[in-house]
Image (cartoon, rainbow over all chains, first blue to last red; front, side):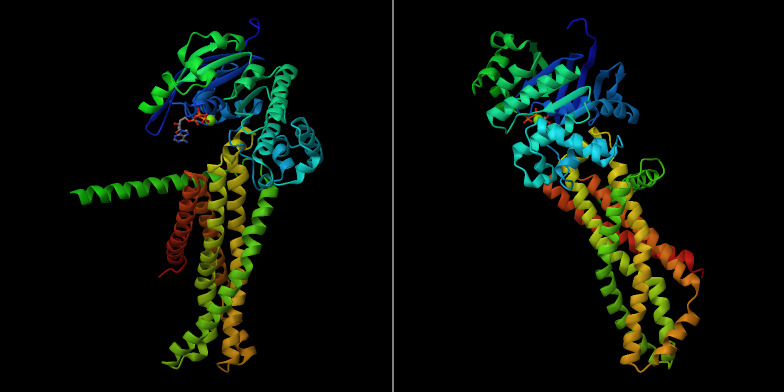
Length: 259
Length: 257
Ligand SMILES: Nc1ncnc2c1ncn2[C@@H]1O[C@H](COP(=O)(O)OP(=O)(O)OP(=O)(O)O)[C@@H](O)[C@H]1O
Ligand SMILES: [Mg+2]
């Protein structure tokens, strides 16, 4: 793995939203073909970090270097460069509610890659099958699906055009344990088969252990710990220990009550 | 002192907003010329904005034309000019009432719908999702709607003109004892192409303004259902006010005094 090149390099990333300084200097290197999982308390800025990395939000300070280009400058061409090669699953699914499921999954194929409706539909149904959804689902509208099904459609949409970089914002939240494991396997397989680079956010430690080559923890706007999944039990870091063991008492709660 | 500061701040805010809307409008219009153009979205907008507005525009026109005939008759009777009713009625409708009433109706229907739809997409991150799928939301959502409204409003106005004049005709012939053929002949001899064309030009401008307001307030909305509600309300009010202001400006351009 060490022979591979760095795909994404985040340096000193800062982002303020309203009165809150959400990101206070994120440093993160992700090697090509690596699967990184980011954990952290609710509201700690994980989603914001992801949005800055894919170019949806403009960072106040710092850089996000992807293949030698600084995405954080946020120019039109940078964003196009980034969206061309990446796919993102949104925490809230963010399905287009006026389009049918298969049109959601095939959206990029239909409107950015100009494939025929027939070919796009075929590909969409394949992707739906990969996330355990029957072809009939393709003709439904997003509002007719359960939350967990919407999440899987969103995952199918993110991977439909085989992107090089995958961003998953809580891919298994709201799924039953069996389906969560199917999704975990799918993510692992994607990263392996396509050599894609993946950054996932999760609260689900079982999922994190399964899909991560490495785990990083975000706390108070910085990455405070990073290591292999089997190192996380003996991290010697009170914040990580508290998070992994899910204890209400500890340094993290202190910060919450103070805020 | 505080009053001055407040007024100043208000003026500055208004200017800033105007600047942002102008930027938004030119970006939306620019998107027509730099591909890709999403035809499907454009057709859908044509149907939704144009076709489904027909009933309400038609009803508004026929009742207004009918009431206008009565009012003109009653007013012109005072100086024995009631024979000019068809001419006065037709020029009022074609130059003023047709474009303004149709635009206000469409402002109520279409700009609120656009603001609500695009605003919901904004707050549920559908617009962000669209960007990550390599589709420019400006080209997919904004440009087709603005173009569709700009093109359909003149057609709606033309229909409103005809229905409005017909409403006047019904009242004049059946209630005021005008001769039907004479009524039509008077109008067709009196109306100039200029009257109709200026009305349609107005309509095009109104269509552009209405859709820009709907799209802008939707696109920039934030803060959940309440934010979308506020955006919708602002869009309708702004569209109506802008239409009326633009109507005066354009009229004063067309009517050289
Ligand atoms: N658009 C926004 N405007 C203002 N503040 C925001 C916005 N988005 C996020 N925030 C704030 O930024 C902080 C981090 O939010 P973020 O969504 O990144 O949290 P998170 O780590 O993803 O939490 P969760 O695990 O609950 O999803 C929160 O305090 C939130 O209030
Ligand atoms: Mg989040």
